[in-house]
Image (cartoon, rainbow, N blue to C red):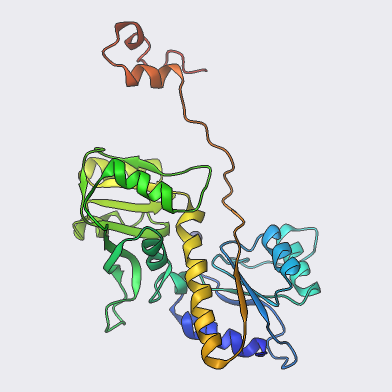
Amino acid sequence: MPALSEVIAALDGLWPRERAEQWDAVGTVCGDVGNPAAQVDRVLFAVDPVQEIADEAVELGAQLLVTHHPLYLRGTTTVAADTFKGRVVHTLIRHGVALHVAHTNADTADPGVSDALAGALDLRVLRPLVPDVTDAAGRRGLGRICEPPRPMRLSELTEWAADRLPVTAQGIRAAGDPDRMIRTLAVCGGSGDGLFEEVRAAGADAYLTADLRHHPASEAREHSPLALLDAAHFATEWPWCEQAAAQLDEISDRHGWGLRTHVSRTVTDPWTAHAASHGAVAAAAAHPSDPDRSASNDITTGAPN
Ligand SMILES: [Zn+2]
Protein backbone atom coordinates (compact mmCIF):
# COMPACT_ATOMS: atom_id res chain seq x y z
CA MET A 1 0.00 0.00 0.00
CA PRO A 2 1.50 3.37 -0.98
CA ALA A 3 1.99 6.21 1.48
CA LEU A 4 -0.36 9.17 1.09
CA SER A 5 2.66 11.31 0.21
CA GLU A 6 3.53 8.99 -2.72
CA VAL A 7 0.01 9.18 -4.15
CA ILE A 8 -0.09 12.96 -3.71
CA ALA A 9 3.27 13.19 -5.52
CA ALA A 10 1.78 11.17 -8.39
CA LEU A 11 -1.23 13.53 -8.56
CA ASP A 12 1.13 16.52 -8.56
CA GLY A 13 2.92 14.89 -11.49
CA LEU A 14 -0.35 14.69 -13.44
CA TRP A 15 -1.47 18.21 -12.52
CA PRO A 16 1.50 20.31 -11.36
CA ARG A 17 0.28 22.89 -8.85
CA GLU A 18 2.36 25.67 -10.41
CA ARG A 19 0.26 25.40 -13.59
CA ALA A 20 -2.87 26.56 -11.75
CA GLU A 21 -4.14 30.12 -12.24
CA GLN A 22 -2.84 32.69 -9.77
CA TRP A 23 -6.30 33.10 -8.14
CA ASP A 24 -6.87 29.37 -7.77
CA ALA A 25 -6.45 27.20 -4.65
CA VAL A 26 -5.21 23.74 -5.66
CA GLY A 27 -3.25 20.96 -3.97
CA THR A 28 -3.81 19.15 -0.69
CA VAL A 29 -6.50 20.74 1.49
CA CYS A 30 -6.32 18.30 4.39
CA GLY A 31 -4.45 15.08 5.11
CA ASP A 32 -1.51 13.85 7.17
CA VAL A 33 0.85 14.01 4.19
CA GLY A 34 4.09 14.04 6.22
CA ASN A 35 3.17 10.88 8.13
CA PRO A 36 4.61 7.72 6.51
CA ALA A 37 2.02 5.67 8.40
CA ALA A 38 -0.75 7.43 6.44
CA GLN A 39 -1.38 4.98 3.61
CA VAL A 40 -3.86 4.86 0.75
CA ASP A 41 -5.88 1.92 -0.46
CA ARG A 42 -9.02 3.54 -1.91
CA VAL A 43 -9.38 6.86 -3.72
CA LEU A 44 -12.64 8.62 -4.60
CA PHE A 45 -12.86 11.15 -7.47
CA ALA A 46 -15.64 13.77 -7.58
CA VAL A 47 -16.38 17.24 -8.96
CA ASP A 48 -17.43 19.03 -5.76
CA PRO A 49 -16.09 18.72 -2.19
CA VAL A 50 -19.57 18.99 -0.64
CA GLN A 51 -20.81 17.15 2.46
CA GLU A 52 -22.58 14.43 0.46
CA ILE A 53 -19.29 13.60 -1.26
CA ALA A 54 -17.31 13.66 2.01
CA ASP A 55 -19.87 11.22 3.46
CA GLU A 56 -19.54 9.04 0.36
CA ALA A 57 -15.73 8.92 0.80
CA VAL A 58 -16.18 7.84 4.43
CA GLU A 59 -18.74 5.18 3.53
CA LEU A 60 -16.46 3.86 0.82
CA GLY A 61 -13.54 3.61 3.27
CA ALA A 62 -11.40 5.88 1.07
CA GLN A 63 -8.29 7.48 2.51
CA LEU A 64 -8.11 10.07 -0.26
CA LEU A 65 -10.73 12.20 -1.96
CA VAL A 66 -9.71 14.02 -5.15
CA THR A 67 -12.03 16.80 -6.33
CA HIS A 68 -11.96 19.24 -9.22
CA HIS A 69 -13.40 22.20 -7.34
CA PRO A 70 -11.53 23.71 -4.37
CA LEU A 71 -13.12 23.57 -0.92
CA TYR A 72 -11.75 26.99 -0.01
CA LEU A 73 -11.01 29.44 -2.81
CA ARG A 74 -10.60 32.41 -0.50
CA GLY A 75 -9.19 32.66 3.01
CA THR A 76 -11.17 31.56 6.04
CA THR A 77 -10.89 32.18 9.78
CA THR A 78 -12.80 29.09 10.89
CA VAL A 79 -13.22 25.38 10.23
CA ALA A 80 -15.88 25.10 12.96
CA ALA A 81 -18.15 22.15 12.25
CA ASP A 82 -21.26 24.36 12.30
CA THR A 83 -20.12 25.94 9.01
CA PHE A 84 -20.75 23.74 5.98
CA LYS A 85 -17.14 23.77 4.81
CA GLY A 86 -15.87 23.26 8.36
CA ARG A 87 -18.16 20.26 8.67
CA VAL A 88 -16.60 18.79 5.51
CA VAL A 89 -13.13 19.29 7.01
CA HIS A 90 -14.20 17.68 10.32
CA THR A 91 -15.80 14.72 8.55
CA LEU A 92 -12.71 14.10 6.45
CA ILE A 93 -10.15 14.45 9.26
CA ARG A 94 -12.21 12.40 11.75
CA HIS A 95 -12.29 9.51 9.28
CA GLY A 96 -8.72 9.86 8.05
CA VAL A 97 -9.64 11.02 4.55
CA ALA A 98 -7.26 13.41 2.80
CA LEU A 99 -8.62 15.94 0.26
CA HIS A 100 -6.65 16.94 -2.82
CA VAL A 101 -7.80 19.46 -5.44
CA ALA A 102 -6.82 19.70 -9.14
CA HIS A 103 -8.72 22.62 -10.68
CA THR A 104 -7.30 25.03 -13.30
CA ASN A 105 -4.13 22.89 -13.39
CA ALA A 106 -6.37 20.01 -14.53
CA ASP A 107 -8.29 22.25 -16.97
CA THR A 108 -5.18 22.97 -19.03
CA ALA A 109 -3.44 19.60 -18.59
CA ASP A 110 -2.77 17.02 -21.31
CA PRO A 111 -5.11 15.25 -21.03
CA GLY A 112 -7.29 17.83 -19.31
CA VAL A 113 -10.89 18.51 -18.38
CA SER A 114 -11.92 19.45 -21.94
CA ASP A 115 -10.27 16.31 -23.37
CA ALA A 116 -12.49 14.28 -21.05
CA LEU A 117 -15.52 16.32 -22.15
CA ALA A 118 -14.62 15.75 -25.82
CA GLY A 119 -14.14 12.05 -25.08
CA ALA A 120 -17.57 11.77 -23.46
CA LEU A 121 -19.04 13.34 -26.61
CA ASP A 122 -17.05 11.04 -28.96
CA LEU A 123 -15.36 14.07 -30.53
CA ARG A 124 -11.94 14.04 -32.15
CA VAL A 125 -9.67 16.61 -30.48
CA LEU A 126 -7.67 18.71 -32.96
CA ARG A 127 -5.92 21.22 -30.67
CA PRO A 128 -6.36 23.44 -27.60
CA LEU A 129 -8.71 26.41 -27.96
CA VAL A 130 -6.30 28.62 -25.99
CA PRO A 131 -2.87 26.96 -26.20
CA ASP A 132 -0.47 27.09 -23.26
CA VAL A 133 2.51 28.87 -24.87
CA THR A 134 4.94 27.08 -22.54
CA ASP A 135 3.97 23.68 -24.03
CA ALA A 136 6.19 22.95 -27.04
CA ALA A 137 4.03 19.93 -27.95
CA GLY A 138 1.01 22.26 -28.35
CA ARG A 139 -1.34 19.96 -26.44
CA ARG A 140 -1.89 21.78 -23.17
CA GLY A 141 -4.23 24.72 -22.84
CA LEU A 142 -7.79 25.80 -22.15
CA GLY A 143 -10.68 24.27 -24.09
CA ARG A 144 -10.34 22.12 -27.18
CA ILE A 145 -11.16 22.47 -30.89
CA CYS A 146 -12.81 19.25 -32.01
CA GLU A 147 -14.58 17.48 -34.84
CA PRO A 148 -17.76 15.45 -34.40
CA PRO A 149 -17.57 11.91 -35.82
CA ARG A 150 -19.53 13.25 -38.79
CA PRO A 151 -20.93 16.67 -39.68
CA MET A 152 -24.17 17.14 -37.73
CA ARG A 153 -26.97 19.68 -37.72
CA LEU A 154 -27.15 21.72 -34.53
CA SER A 155 -30.44 20.02 -33.59
CA GLU A 156 -28.79 16.59 -33.90
CA LEU A 157 -25.67 17.67 -32.02
CA THR A 158 -27.86 18.99 -29.18
CA GLU A 159 -29.53 15.57 -28.81
CA TRP A 160 -26.13 13.90 -29.20
CA ALA A 161 -24.76 15.87 -26.22
CA ALA A 162 -27.93 15.25 -24.18
CA ASP A 163 -27.49 11.50 -24.79
CA ARG A 164 -23.85 11.42 -23.73
CA LEU A 165 -23.33 13.86 -20.85
CA PRO A 166 -24.38 13.06 -17.26
CA VAL A 167 -28.07 13.57 -16.57
CA THR A 168 -28.82 16.93 -14.95
CA ALA A 169 -32.03 18.91 -14.50
CA GLN A 170 -30.88 21.50 -17.03
CA GLY A 171 -30.13 19.15 -19.90
CA ILE A 172 -28.66 20.92 -22.94
CA ARG A 173 -29.74 24.38 -24.13
CA ALA A 174 -28.89 25.43 -27.66
CA ALA A 175 -28.89 28.74 -29.51
CA GLY A 176 -28.78 29.15 -33.27
CA ASP A 177 -30.21 27.82 -36.51
CA PRO A 178 -31.17 24.19 -35.76
CA ASP A 179 -30.16 23.24 -39.31
CA ARG A 180 -26.72 24.83 -39.11
CA MET A 181 -24.15 22.19 -40.10
CA ILE A 182 -21.53 21.66 -37.38
CA ARG A 183 -18.19 20.46 -38.70
CA THR A 184 -15.92 22.06 -36.09
CA LEU A 185 -16.90 22.38 -32.47
CA ALA A 186 -15.11 24.16 -29.62
CA VAL A 187 -15.64 22.73 -26.14
CA CYS A 188 -14.65 24.04 -22.73
CA GLY A 189 -15.48 22.26 -19.47
CA GLY A 190 -16.84 24.63 -16.80
CA SER A 191 -17.74 28.31 -17.27
CA GLY A 192 -16.53 29.19 -20.75
CA ASP A 193 -18.31 32.39 -21.71
CA GLY A 194 -15.11 34.41 -21.56
CA LEU A 195 -13.70 32.66 -24.62
CA PHE A 196 -16.05 33.71 -27.46
CA GLU A 197 -13.35 35.69 -29.23
CA GLU A 198 -11.01 32.69 -29.29
CA VAL A 199 -13.84 30.43 -30.47
CA ARG A 200 -14.64 32.78 -33.36
CA ALA A 201 -10.95 33.14 -34.23
CA ALA A 202 -10.70 29.33 -34.39
CA GLY A 203 -13.50 29.28 -36.98
CA ALA A 204 -15.65 26.86 -34.98
CA ASP A 205 -19.26 26.31 -36.13
CA ALA A 206 -20.47 25.75 -32.55
CA TYR A 207 -19.31 26.12 -28.97
CA LEU A 208 -20.28 23.81 -26.12
CA THR A 209 -19.58 24.97 -22.56
CA ALA A 210 -21.44 25.75 -19.30
CA ASP A 211 -22.87 28.75 -17.43
CA LEU A 212 -23.61 30.81 -20.54
CA ARG A 213 -25.05 34.08 -19.23
CA HIS A 214 -27.56 36.27 -21.06
CA HIS A 215 -25.33 39.15 -22.15
CA PRO A 216 -22.24 37.28 -23.34
CA ALA A 217 -24.45 34.72 -25.13
CA SER A 218 -26.70 37.39 -26.66
CA GLU A 219 -23.71 39.40 -27.89
CA ALA A 220 -22.04 36.29 -29.30
CA ARG A 221 -25.24 35.50 -31.22
CA GLU A 222 -25.36 39.03 -32.68
CA HIS A 223 -21.69 38.86 -33.59
CA SER A 224 -21.68 35.75 -35.81
CA PRO A 225 -23.78 32.69 -36.69
CA LEU A 226 -21.78 30.65 -34.11
CA ALA A 227 -24.15 28.11 -32.53
CA LEU A 228 -24.08 27.76 -28.74
CA LEU A 229 -24.68 24.70 -26.59
CA ASP A 230 -24.99 25.21 -22.85
CA ALA A 231 -24.71 22.22 -20.51
CA ALA A 232 -24.74 22.11 -16.71
CA HIS A 233 -21.36 23.04 -15.23
CA PHE A 234 -21.25 19.69 -13.38
CA ALA A 235 -22.03 17.73 -16.56
CA THR A 236 -19.12 19.27 -18.47
CA GLU A 237 -16.60 18.49 -15.71
CA TRP A 238 -17.72 15.11 -14.40
CA PRO A 239 -16.14 13.18 -17.33
CA TRP A 240 -12.77 14.40 -16.00
CA CYS A 241 -13.29 12.28 -12.87
CA GLU A 242 -13.33 9.09 -14.93
CA GLN A 243 -10.32 10.21 -16.95
CA ALA A 244 -8.41 11.16 -13.77
CA ALA A 245 -9.24 7.85 -12.07
CA ALA A 246 -7.97 5.96 -15.14
CA GLN A 247 -4.75 7.98 -15.04
CA LEU A 248 -4.19 7.10 -11.37
CA ASP A 249 -5.05 3.44 -12.10
CA GLU A 250 -2.32 3.39 -14.69
CA ILE A 251 0.24 4.83 -12.24
CA SER A 252 -0.90 2.39 -9.56
CA ASP A 253 -0.43 -0.57 -11.97
CA ARG A 254 3.02 0.67 -12.91
CA HIS A 255 4.08 0.84 -9.26
CA GLY A 256 2.20 -2.26 -8.15
CA TRP A 257 0.28 -0.17 -5.60
CA GLY A 258 -3.00 -2.03 -5.99
CA LEU A 259 -5.03 1.16 -5.47
CA ARG A 260 -8.79 0.92 -5.84
CA THR A 261 -10.13 4.03 -7.51
CA HIS A 262 -13.79 5.03 -7.55
CA VAL A 263 -15.70 7.74 -9.37
CA SER A 264 -18.63 9.27 -7.53
CA ARG A 265 -21.88 9.03 -9.47
CA THR A 266 -23.60 11.53 -7.19
CA VAL A 267 -24.89 14.49 -9.20
CA THR A 268 -23.77 17.60 -7.30
CA ASP A 269 -25.17 20.06 -9.83
CA PRO A 270 -27.01 22.57 -7.60
CA TRP A 271 -30.06 22.64 -9.92
CA THR A 272 -32.50 19.82 -9.25
CA ALA A 273 -35.59 20.56 -11.35
CA HIS A 274 -36.51 21.98 -14.74
CA ALA A 275 -39.83 22.88 -16.32
CA ALA A 276 -40.10 23.67 -20.02
CA SER A 277 -41.94 26.97 -20.21
CA HIS A 278 -45.40 27.05 -21.80
CA GLY A 279 -46.83 30.39 -20.68
CA ALA A 280 -48.80 32.86 -22.79
CA VAL A 281 -45.79 34.88 -23.97
CA ALA A 282 -43.91 31.85 -25.23
CA ALA A 283 -47.06 30.49 -26.92
CA ALA A 284 -47.52 33.79 -28.74
CA ALA A 285 -43.90 33.79 -29.86
CA ALA A 286 -44.23 30.23 -31.12
CA HIS A 287 -47.33 31.08 -33.19
CA PRO A 288 -46.68 34.60 -34.50
CA SER A 289 -49.08 34.13 -37.42
CA ASP A 290 -51.97 33.08 -35.19
CA PRO A 291 -54.07 36.28 -34.84
CA ASP A 292 -55.69 35.13 -31.60
CA ARG A 293 -52.35 34.52 -29.97
CA SER A 294 -50.33 37.34 -31.49
CA ALA A 295 -52.51 39.76 -29.53
CA SER A 296 -50.63 38.66 -26.44
CA ASN A 297 -47.23 38.92 -28.12
CA ASP A 298 -46.53 42.06 -26.12
CA ILE A 299 -44.36 40.92 -23.24
CA THR A 300 -46.38 43.04 -20.80
CA THR A 301 -49.50 40.98 -21.57
CA GLY A 302 -49.90 37.89 -19.49
CA ALA A 303 -46.42 38.23 -18.04
CA PRO A 304 -47.49 38.06 -14.37
CA ASN A 305 -48.30 34.35 -14.85
ZN1 LIG B 1 -15.79 23.95 -12.60
